[in-house]
Amino acid sequence: MNQERNKKLIFPEYTSEIISKLMEKYKIDESIDQIFDKMEIGEETKGRKIANLLREIVHGGLSKKDLSLEIEKRLNISEIKATNLAKDLQEKILLPMETTPPKITPQIKEGVKKKPKDIYREPIK
Image (cartoon, rainbow, N blue to C red; front, side, top):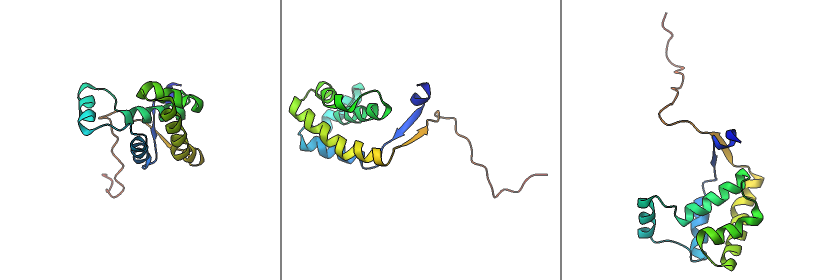
């Protein structure tokens, strides 16, 4: 389990676009001012909450069948919207990720970077 926490999940590039479009579709988007206000006080935006739910599913901390209930609770939206959003997220993000698994890379601590070996440098004798 600790090894799972030390890995960083990399979603496909288009994931944030899909989340944004789905938020617009279900009218749960936030204004720029609301996003900045939340960032100032360290609160998660709605888009970030959705991404974290998807991450929990991929890592096995949340089942797909509980996704709509969690969306309803965390985003404070109606059951119908949450159910439809969960269905779209599964079809557009989770299902394609099952056929093409996401990249999981070990996290590197900030500031501790190994220098790549310089293959063009002549050895010192």
